[in-house]
Length: 352
Image (cartoon, rainbow, N blue to C red):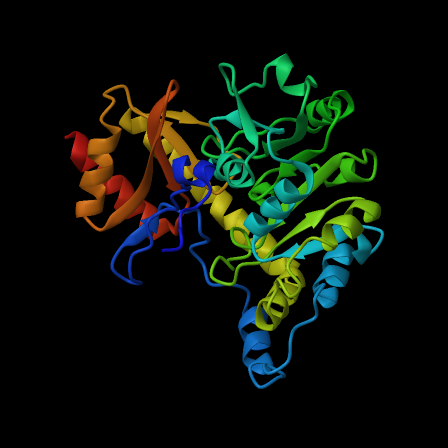
């Protein structure tokens, strides 16, 4: 009988667990950092028009229309600075596949996006977690090179904290590291800074983005990488042939063209975020100032998991996260004002 066992390393790995996705309409979803508002109207119109298009044909393998639009919007020299992907998670997969060989090392801050570790495990690579210092600052050794270090991930803003590493510090890290520094900017549209300007100054700075958060396209799955053209060309050679489908590319191009819509929605969500932070503080939570579309908070009672279950029983989903050797807490996505009002009311009721 043929053996069907996976590689031993894969049998031992802990898979990444995404946030709970219940059927639509049953819960107030504040657990996966989705945009609570519908995507730009131009996206819906573009998808409707494209549905009668050439669905029987393979899509453009490099999503040229999107890359041209994104380069113009982001102020890049041209589309050759962009690689499109099936969500930014695929971009992260391509980067690990391209840079980190079996037994080589990937570095990430801790706590941060756990998927980085999973991608290293799949590759048969090692991963090194560098704990944040108090105040969510990076220690000096995060920027130090060492044997077999091939790739460094820096989510900025970070999840679950929503904190940022200033651009000048990222530049210093890039100058000191002997390998690519991937700045994962999934939440950058909600912050007042980003590291796109470093890409043209440092050939080892790569920036990843997603349209799942600020553009409201989590269900479409589209992300992209910004890097110098020589590197984009090499990574294009190892991606899947038709990694971005026709409708997703149409939707992403329309979304990227909707910058007025983006500015309005981000401003609205940032106002709601500020109100969330104030209300949580009044309830007694320790709240980390956020630059993303979520808030990380802990309560002196330590009853985070109990509160998570209480909210779920009352049809409100938030993300309970427990980090070994660090601690646990709640990550609450920014919803609509009505959704946040309902969530805060139930939290207050829990502590009464």
